[in-house]
Structures are given as C-alpha cells and as structure tokens.
Image (cartoon, rainbow, N blue to C red; front, side, top):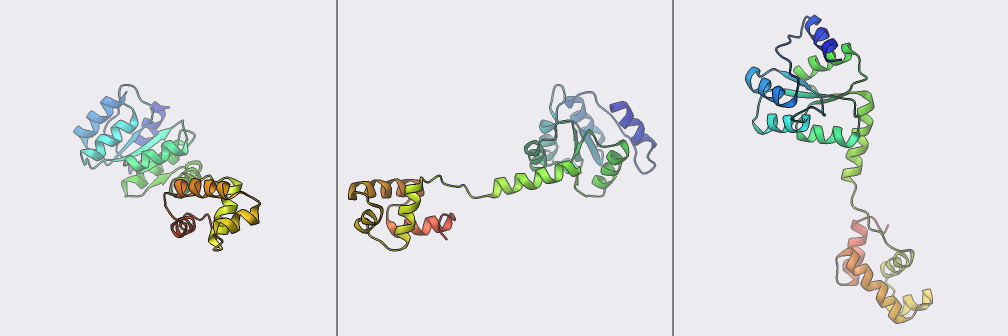
Length: 197
C-alpha cells in the first residue's frame, strides 16, 4: 500500500514527495529535517506510534500538518488524533486519489476527514460534551420531584407511604450525589444537571 501511495503522490503534479519513512522514529526525524507541508502517518507504526509523532510535531511547533491514514477507524482514536494536533484522519479504505486530494487540502490549511470518520467524530464530541448524568434510584427521583414541589419530609413520607427515617435516608443520599447540604441547593443543582424540568 505504501509503495502505491508513494507512486500516486509522485504522479500528482501539484504534490511533491520530499521523503518517506519506514517507522515512526524515522518519520519524526524526516519531519524535523525536511519540514514538509504535510506528513501522512499511520496510527500504528514501529518504534514510535503516530500519536507520539504528532505530539512531538505540536510540542516542537513544527510547521508540518499531520494527516493520519489508519486501518483502525475508531472515533475515539480519531478524536484523540485531532486533539493532539492532527489536521486529518482517513481510512485506509480511501482511494489513492482521495488520499492525494486530502494531502492537497491539508496543505491548503483545511481539515480532512473520511466520511466514515466524520460521524464518529461528531458522536465523540457529543459524548464528551454531555454533562455527566447522575444515577438516581426511582425512589430518589420521586423524593427529588416532591422536594422541588416544596413538600416537607413528613409530607413526602405521607405521600409515598414512607417512614420519616426512610425519607431522611433518601434525602441524605440525594445530597451526597448532588454534592450539596440542603434542600434548596439540591433543587438548584438538580435543575442545573437536567434532572428536573
């Protein structure tokens, strides 16, 4: 595959192949020496993996824009690659023409993602930006809703047919889970976390 890509890049008039490497350490040395506009790396490489290379490129503020080409199209890996400083992530299923197009686009300053990577990255962003959901028991949720309605512990006990001690136990558990020490703060924190409408 590597030989085919080298030929495809060499055959593309607007691209100039300035070097190639057999492992991650050679790739990083070549990037430091040759300072290409774009480096095409694999995530899994001998001696030094692609993530370590892109971290070094970012840390050393080298001008090279890194595009990953990987057989492992995993959204978490692609997300991490972009977070580490890569500007592209392509599947090895991509055609040589698509890879050359991506190299040219990266050279122009664009971010390039294979279609199968795009939805995975979007899912990963949604997953990572979602507020941490608390796990409340059904009874804790009922008690929380009744607190929000302004009911006292004895009234909650009557409504749910629970002893005052049991209600207090649920309240204490809620306070601990929400990181608060009293009712008003519990309601405010529950609303902030989307546990109450």
